[in-house]
Length: 59
Image (cartoon, rainbow, N blue to C red; front, side, top):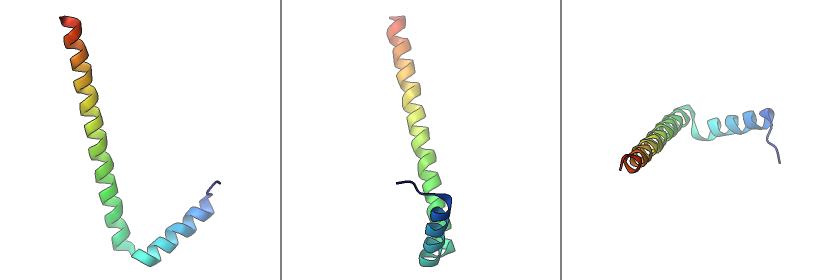
């Protein structure tokens, strides 16, 4: 099952009618913030993991 561009546009138009533009923009903002925070946490974990490996090599 593949969703094409036309189907995606129709879904977005229906969502805009049902929820309104302000709700959708707020949802997009919240989603973007969540993704950014997730990436920051993953990067922080990777940096900690890398520094832990370096500590083991130094010992």
